[in-house]
Amino acid sequence: MAVLDVPLPAHRAPAPSPPLHVNALQTLCRHVFAFRMVLIGLGAPWALARTARGGPTYLVGGAILLTFLLSYVLFRDWERFGPLLLRHRRLLALDMGLSVLLLVTAPPGSPLGLVSVCTPLLAGLVHGWRGSAVYAAVQAIAVAVLADTLVLPVLCLLAGGAGSCLRDLLLRFGEASRALAETRSRLAVAEAVRAERNRLAREMHDSVAKTLHGLALTADALARTTDPTDIRRQAELLSVAARHAAAESRCLLTDLRQAPDAPGVSLLSELRDLTTGAELRTVVGLPVVPATVARHLLAVTSEALENARRHARASRVTVTLTADTTDLTLTIEDDGCGLPDGADLPALSRQGHFGLLGMAERAAEIGARLIVGPGPKGSGSQVRLDLPLAALEAGA
Picture 1 (cartoon, helix red, strand yellow):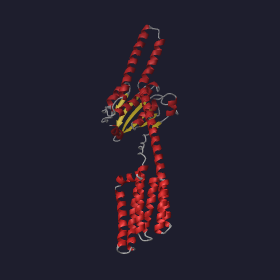
Picture 2 (cartoon, rainbow, N blue to C red; picture 1 turned 90 degrees about the horizontal axis):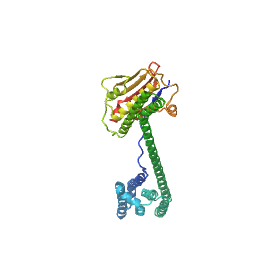
Picture 3 (tube, rainbow, N blue to C red; picture 1 turned 90 degrees about the vertical axis):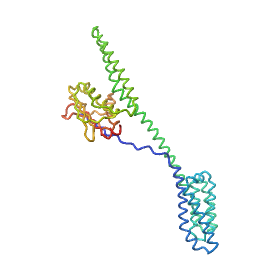
Picture 4 (tube, one colour; picture 1 turned 120 degrees about the vertical axis):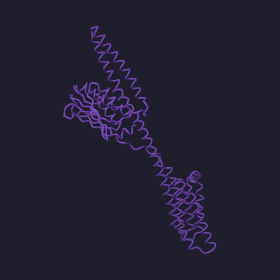
């Protein structure tokens, strides 16, 4: 006997936010000024201590103060001044002038010379390879002339290359993020279309398709009947079935256009109308379920009853609805022949049997767990649906 167990649907992660490469690039530029302030704070005491008293001290102190304050303003109000630097890239020449001012005023060997690597780094982040090459080369030449060392010029060139590499990496990451977002968007649209098609297929199968099948059988019987009395009786049955199909079509359209925030319904009263000819067992204190959830539960019950009567040839069907502190449980049991061995959802779907597939999809739609298998005594079949009460609260 086959057992079909449909687990709770997994929650998907939300779609990612738009690519952040532009914000990341601006953040890196802002932190370059923070790095410069740290270097100035570390090198200022050493430079002032080794500067001659009087005018040279005031000159070095003024250059340090000016560079630090401008860096602080750009760091603090980057949202205001940062876009100007990104739009007008020639403003980096002023930044280079501040670095040169420190090199001119600071004594030889001062740690303030490390501030000069910030401009090539900024140029690499803002301009890319071409702009960083120009600024790094000019800065390296200025440092070599003023500082009389080869270490700082090499660092300037390396800083320009590092900034360009970071910029290129961020741009590539941004392109990959955009491509991923577009792919996810297309997949989400395709998934939504597929889900809507499956929903319409379930609704058609559970309502109009069954009545149309009955119409076809009645029409076949009418075509083989020659007795006028039987013809009249079959014609009346055909007329009643056609009106029933029209009513089901209207109900289907009403359900499809129903607002998602429709008020809850009493599942018990709906089951009483549905389970005519079957035994209904319930308990006191059943919760009121949202209309959308109730529609899925009633559709699962209707499909199980139809399978028991038409395919399992059951003589006794029992519908049980219970609730505890965590779950609402719906069980449909019959004493029929049960499911064939080895039956599964894909195989049944390929054979044109979509009832169990629709029940499984409905259970997954409302966050319930569906188990289809043999009855508790090993004979017949049992359809059990466990719906967490938390899902009821979420669907309310």
